[in-house]
Each structure stands twice: as structure tokens, then as C-alpha cells.
Amino acid sequence: VKPAPFLYRRPESLEEALELLREHGDEAKVLAGGQSLVPLLNMRLARPAVLVDVNGIAGLDRVEANGGVRVGALVRQRQLERVPLPLVAEALPHVGHLVTRNRGTVGGSIAHADAAAELPLCLTVLGGTVVVRSARGERELPAEEFFVSHFTTRLAPDELVVETVWPSRGDGWGFAFEELAQKRGDFALSMAACALRVENGRVAEARVGVGSVVERPTLLETDLVGSEPTADLLRGAAAAIEPFGTVHASAAYLSHLTGVLVERAVLRAWRSA
Amino acid sequence: MAPGLSETGVWSPPQLEPPTRDDCINTSLTYGFVFDMCGVEIDPVTFQVRIDRYVSMHDAGTLLNPLIADGQVHGAFVQGVAAALYEEFIYDEAGSFLSGSFADYLVPTASEIPDLEILHQETPSPLTPLGAKGLAEGNCMSTPACIANAVADALGVEDVEVPLTPSRVWELLQR
Image 1 (cartoon, rainbow over the protein chains, first blue to last red):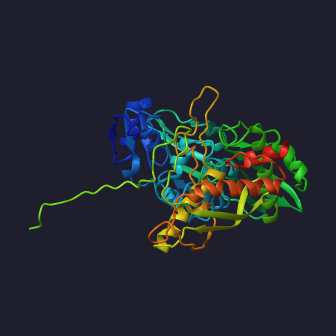
Image 2: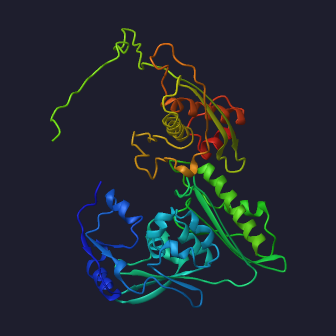
Image 3: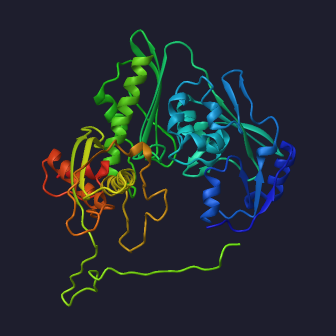
């Protein structure tokens, strides 16, 4: 199938792109790497009137270490593999395939907000932020607020994701990412990620999140702080998640699997801290 | 200048006749033989099936081109693994087709396919001029059954339904 007709615009500057988004609003879709959008266009699940191709905008493909790592929206997922970011380095091999990571962008994955995408979960667990800009100005949103639901974010129709900020964590932190997909590079049945800080043999801070089985990257409430992680403690925390079943797996199996992945992620982060 | 002549010939084996009144048919001029053996492991935590070793033996009579013969076996084996562990036509109660795109219809790739050991037993056919028999899609039939039997044996259950996805294996063990 081929896409429905659309108007194609390739702005040369950020200002021009924001002006196009202001003008067309809901009618416009932003094209970056196209690894999710183009299949949606071809299947006509998305029928935007205008496509704003941001690939020609200079300056959106930079990576800067400055109060955390600031990653330009156009940085390709493959380039991010070469940035020493904890958790992300473990998650990226699960993001599609090498050829899709060569095209797919970090900002695109964040703006697309697929509940089964790895990068939104990592950004949420690391406590990162999303920098968005429009002709009206710029704002920075914590990942926990940015992701609303499957394919839905707090992004207004005239706003563009320009940068994501990945906080650096110092000594005492451990990280782990776990997922299970039936096929390599396929959408995960379930996924879990953990960032935790250990002090005097006890957990001092813990951020544990799950994806795929929920509508958006979701942080778990755990009783980890002040304790040593145990399987029982973690299974209990994961039990609060109620997965919806899919064509590939029942809700009951996904509930079991999510418990397993949470346990593995936390115990591995604990050991690496 | 080449002469503008061509000739097309058609021959149908006389043995290949329409179905009989009781719906029997000889679909192939020659028949090969196949047996498969495999060892599987099931992850007791995630319930994924892993094929540890797979051996497929064929008797296609005299092999006319061994390289093509092995290629045929490999291709059919991949289709068999797909049917056993991945691919499924899924419908909902209203009859809507739910696995109609490659996002939902899981075609395995090279990453999912285990090594295959192929053995050939060459027993020439007395019925064909070169002693050759059939060889092509045998593993499409033998491989799903072989994997399913191995999984049933590992789990100690009588009936299994393919594809044996992690979710389906887990549910078999909940009964």
C-alpha cells in the first residue's frame, strides 16, 4: 500500500519548521527517521495533510555533555550507541535492527511514544527530560509527564521535540535493562529497566520502570529503599502492574513475565552498583 | 542475426490423473522419505522453546545436485520452525484477521533459526530413469510435528497446539 497524498515540506531552519507547524497544527506530521511513521503512512493508519521533513535542519544532531548528556532530536539511534550512557547502552541493541537504528532518531522514538519502545522507558527510569520548542517558545518536560499514553504525549500540535536530556549518575549507581521479544528486534512482549543507588549495602534510591505491557512507561512503587532487594519484594511490586493481553500473549503470562523481568533488572542493577 | 524460431513442448506424466470418485489422488510423480530428530529445552522461567540440536535425514534417491538438495531442505526447515514456534493466522471472535501484517505475523529471521544437520540416504528409485525421487517441502510437514512432539515430551503433556509461543507453553503448564 502507498500513502494517501500529502504535501511535503523540507524546512532548512528550525524557525521555518516551527512556522510550518504553527501554520498546519494537527494537519502536519514531523518526518525524522521515518522508521515508524512511514509504515503508518503506507498502511494509511496515519493520513497527515502535510509532512514536515526536519532532516535538513542543522544543529539538531549534536550530542553535548553538559549537566547530563543533551542529545539532539535528529541524533540517530545508531549514533547514540557510541555515547557512553548507562542503561541506554544496554537497551539500544533491542531497538529494531541495525539498519533501522541507522535511520531512526532518538527524538523520533521519544515523540512517537510507542508503549513498546525502549528509549521512552530508559528516559523515564533515568529521570530525564524532553526539550520541546514552538513559535511560542521553549519548555522542558520531565519524561514522567511527557508520556501520556500509547502514541500520545504532552506535545502540542505546533511543538517539536528538539532535545532529550539524559542525567548523569555518579558513583554507587547500578543499571540494568531486560526485555523479552519473540523475535530479535521485534516488539517486546514485556520490558523492565532499573536505576538504583546503593549506600552502605542498602538501596538508597531506586527507579524501576516497565514498558510494553502498559500504556506508557510506568515507574513502579517499591519498598526497596533501605533494604536489600529480594525476589519476593520485587514480585510484589510488579504485581501492581496489570498487563493487557495481546494477540501473542495472554494477560496472565505477561503478568508472570513482567515479574520475572523486573526481578532480573533490579537484581542485576543491584549487583552492578 | 538469430533466427526468430522457438518451440514449446508440453508433457504431462500419465501417472498424474484427476482425483478418483472417492477423492484419492497421486499428487507427485516421485516420493522422497524424511525423518527428523530434535532436542529442545524449555526455559522454566520465560517458557521460551530453544532448539538445541536438529537432525533431518532424507532419502531422495540419487541426488542429482547435492547443493540444491540441501538448499531445499534448509528452506523447508525454516518454514517448519516458523509454523512450530512463530507464525499464526489469528482471528478474533467476529472473524477479523488480527495477524495481517508482518508486525503481527511473526516470520522468523536468521537470528531465530538454529543450525540444521542434514543427512542423505541415497536409495536409487527403480522407477525413474536416473534413480531420483522427490525432495522439496518435506520439512514443512516433518519439522512442526517433530518440534511439537519434543515439546510435548519435555512438558509431559499429550496435546500441544502450534505455534508454541512462550505464552502458550506457560498456559499448558497451568492446567
